[in-house]
Image 1 (cartoon, rainbow, N blue to C red):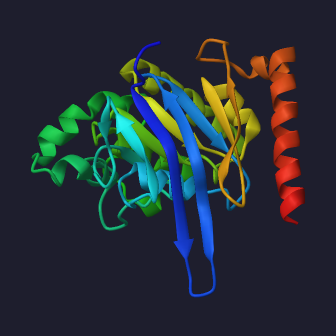
Image 2: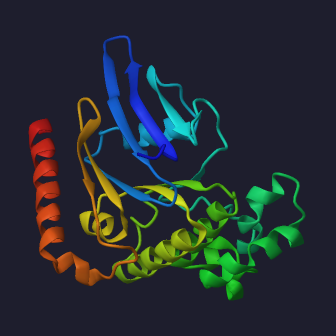
Length: 258
């Protein structure tokens, strides 16, 4: 079996107050090969954000390790691209100046940074929006700009935390297809948090279902259907079965916490 490109091994993180200690995540382990797409599903409070913060190097786990190409990533921020549900575009900068920000922070001149982003800008349909400010753009346009900005980090491992969760259904479908196309072309390895089971089934090579108290992996699914996929796969018997199992697992977790 090949050595994993990315691996989380027995990761545990607790948070303490004066009254108690809570296990945010407990003994979480999984791995990915380069170019794979993993979706993470789970109810609120299952530790998804803590997991991402640990992977991004923003927190120290109590135990366990995170490895990229065999090297530990613990407390090493800057090894991943990180995109949130809120686009976090700087309102005083144009779309172009937001896009080039990751490279500008590392000393690349504006024109050179824009030139290197040309293909991503074109793929995301942003060429006519570069001189607009964020408040002059729709939610979908802003999120496309945030995606291009994340790609400009040049990191082959991306953490996407509900990036399309606030969008309407049609815009979401468009951006899902766009993300799949770009990820396949660039051989990006992606961890993708979502609350939408259909979205996970459509986009992913694998799905982690997480539970709460403590945050832990309930089950991992591997989807053999090649990507990219169309919405038609959701009507296939295997996808219907997996969706039913996932919804049952999540329902049990929510009911148990009620």
